[in-house]
Image (cartoon, rainbow, N blue to C red; front, side, top):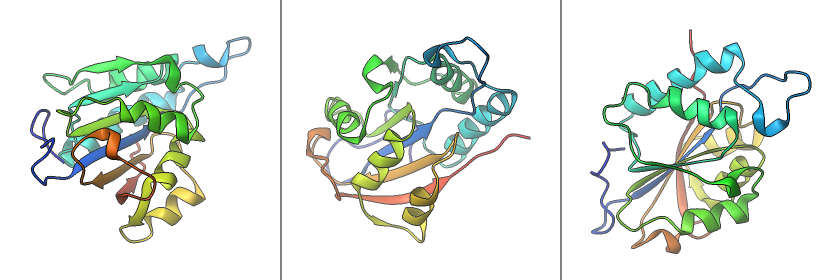
Length: 182
């Protein structure tokens, strides 16, 4: 993983799709699902996810986020210490999207983006990871199949001239972690 702007959009360097499920959300009575805030655990775990991404050299060139309140707050806490933060796009299509719809959105990514971060919801995110991963390091596919909990981060790598070339089974799932805050 690289710092923003250093991912190679061609020339043989792998592209990375980093998939982050939003941090743990609260369930306040009477609050619509789209408007749910983060729970105290989510407020602790989201910064831990940001630290984990940073320590792994996984700052994205672009972040795509659902418009749900819990996703926006997760993103704020993830990138809070990154200077400068990468560009972000909030896309309402990510809310409730299945794997096929998520892949369609990923296909729209500009070619100059080497590392893309997708922040959204399950079950679509886990389905996308399983859909794209033709191979995996260690038992990471089994981990995703078993559970893709809140704040989970999956990193998929693949070689391709542009994002439209990403197809099912073409990526390597290099890691799956669940950062937790103190």
